[in-house]
Length: 208
Image 1 (cartoon, one colour):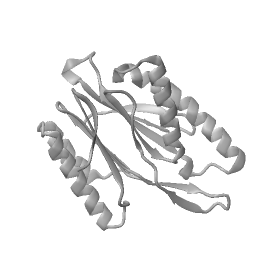
Image 2: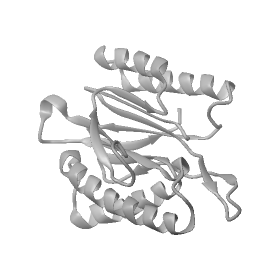
Image 3: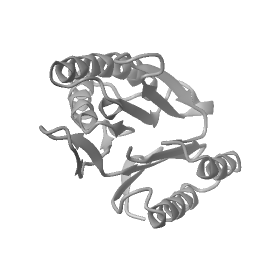
């Protein structure tokens, strides 16, 4: 499964996503695809996708829906995104199950990141949307500080400490890059990643 890493503190949010996915071809064999898993949704919100490559298509559909509804505040967007992506995922799973039995490779999860104007004491929010109970239903959990998927507890521990110490976002990005480089040297992740940051000024892509 491709790697995603996120963290937030009073300064904003940092985002990292591995740009690879595994898909089954017509013979049922695994093939590797290069995709962009980090998708800006609005001026102050973004979505990361993990799992099946179709998650990116669902994210693009969500972006069109959000723009049509003129949503930008992440707290308003969260409820709409959970309902919309649940419907899209249910449709995807029904279509897949007509052709192939349910496989872990078909699982999709998302992280919604963004800024809210409704709570100035906690302006930045992260939400994990995943199949918490059973396929194909999506549930949501709020992420307090740092999170990785698949879980990298050592990196999360370091990032959580930096979040509580209110470290500058660029220092946190540097820590993530170091962690990913270590995983790359161990053959656990691929060579291509996308990075982004959300601050009071909005979303911006990064090339650390």
